[in-house]
Image (cartoon, rainbow over all chains, first blue to last red; front, side, top):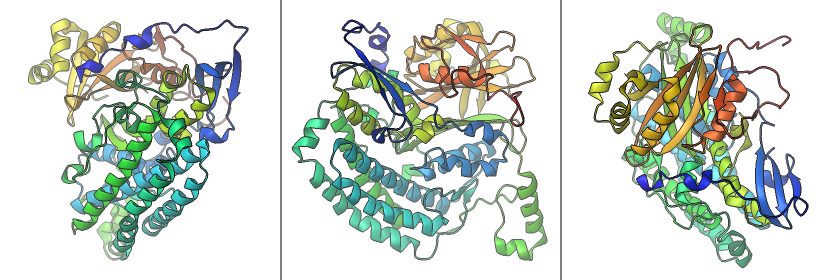
Amino acid sequence: MTEFVSTGSLLEPHVVEGSGDTTMVLNMGPQHPSTHGVLRLVIEIDGETVLKVVPDIGYLHTGIEKTCEAKFYQQVVPMTDRIDYLSPMSNNLCYCLAVEKLLELEIPDRAQWMRVLLNELTRLNSHLVWLGTHAMDIGALTVFLYTFREREEILRIFEHVSGQRMMTSYFRIGGLALDPPYDFFDRVQALIKILPEKIDEYQNLLTGNPIWVSRLKGVGHLSAADGIALGVTGPPLRASGVDFDLRRDMPYSSYEKFQFKVPISTDCDVWARYVIRLEEMRESVKICQQALDGMPEGPIKANSPKVVLPDREKMKTEMEALIYHFKIVTEGFTVPAGEVYQAIESPRGEMGYYVVSDGTAKPYRVHMRNPSFATLQALQTMCAGRLIADVVAVIGSIDIVLGEIDR
Amino acid sequence: MATAGNKEDVLSEHAANPAVASIVAWKREAVVDALWDRGELTLTIARSDIRQAAKIVQTAGFNFLEDVTAVDWYPTEPRFQISYHILSHGMKQRVRLRAFLASDDPVIDSITPVWPSANFYEREVFDLFGVRFAGHPNLRRIMMPDEWEGHPLRKDYPVEGYR
C-alpha cells in the first residue's frame, strides 16, 4: 500500500479559475433537506460550476466529550448513542471495547456473537436510511418508502431486545445488559430471510433507472491517494479501490470467526459508493445468518463482579451481590491508568474511541474519532469543477451524520 | 500519567517494528519515551521533531493518519499531550506518536504538510484546547462559534455557573 503515501497533489495551491466579479458565493444550509442535518456549506460558484466548497460545522456541538469526563465509566454508554443516532450499537460497542481493553476483561463468546449480530443489524439499519435519503435527495422518492418499511422492522427488533428503538444503550462494559428475549432470534431470522429479495427490489428500482445512473456515474471522483491523504475511511475509501476493512483486517469481538467478502470498486465515484453499500448489505445479511446459526450458549456478562452489575435475582438474595451492586452504582469502578485507542468498522467507516484513564472511576478523557468528520474534508476534492447539483449527490454518497461530526 | 517505562527495553524489544526502526535510524534522541501497553505501541517524540517524525513514520509504511487529539494534564507540567494515531493498511497495525507541550507556550508544528487530513483534527484541538499548530493553513475555530472565549475541553474551564 506504499503507493498511496504520496499526498503531493493536494498540497499544490489550487488555482481558482475566473475572476472575482464572475463568481458568486452561495450559502447552502444549515437548514437544507439534503444536508442530512445542520451542515452549512459556503459554495463559490461560477455559473453552475463549483469552484470551492467550505463546510461550516458545529451547529450540533453539545460537548459530549466534556460531559463524558464528569460521568462514571458505565454512565458514558448512553452518551455514545447520541453521537451517531443511526448506528447506536456501533458506538456502544466501540466504547465498551475500549474500556474492556483498559480493564483487560475477557468477554464471553455469546456476548461477542450477540454484539456482532446486533452490529450487522445496525449496519443494515444505517444503510437503509442512507439509501432512502440518498435516493430522495436525487429525486427518486419511492425508494424511501421501501427502505423505511424494512428499517421499521429492524427498529422493532431493537425495541424488542433493548426497550428502545434508536438510543439502545444495550451493551454494557463486560457484556450485554440482558439476555435477549425468547423470540428474538426467530424475529431476526424472519427479517434476514426476506432481506436479500428486498435488496434486489431496491436495486431494481434504482440500478436500471437512467436518471439515477446519469446523476451518479462519474460524479464526485476521489482517488485512492487523495482519500487516504484526506482521512476518508469505510465505503467511500473502498469505492476508491483500497482493500481495507477493520472487521476483516484487524478483527474485534470475534469477527475473525465469520466469513464475508469485502466489496471493492475502483470506479472512485458516487456510483461505486452506491454499489458497494448495497453489496455490504448483502454481506451483513450473511454475517447475521452465520451469527444466528452458530450462536454459542453461555453467559452474556464477563465474570468480574467488581465491574459487571450482578443479576437482579442474585442482588435480592445474596448479600455480596447487593454490596457489589451498591458499590458500582454509587461510586463506579476504578480503571487502571493508561490510554487505549479502539477502532471498529462502523457503517460509515472507521470509528475510534480514545479513552485515557488516570486510575479513577471517571474517564480522564474520551475522544471519538468519527468517520463523517474526516470524510467531510474530502468534499472540496470531490465537488470542485462539477455542477452545483452534484454537491447534493456527493453529500449523499459520503453518508454523513451531523451528530457525530459535531459531537 | 502512566509514562513510567523503560524506554530502551521497549525500543530494543520492538526494534523490528518499521516505525521504531525508522525513527531510531533517523534520530534516536527524538524518541523521548517508548511504551508498550495493552498491545499498543506509544512513542513520545520531542516537540520540535514531530513533523519530521510523522514524515518518517509515513515513509516507513504507516500510511493513514487516523486521529489527532489532545489530553490536558492540568495542573501537571508539561500540560498538554498531543496524540497522533497512525495506521498502516499494509501491515495492519498502528502506532501512537505523542508530544508534550508546556502551558506557557502551547505551540507545535502542524503535520498538515504530511497528511492533509490533519487539517480538521488540528483545528478541533486548537478550538477545544487552545493548542496552536505552527504552519497550519487555516487555524480557525471549528466547533465553537468564532467569537467564543476560552477552550472548553481544558480541565480548568468551568463547567457550570458564569464564565
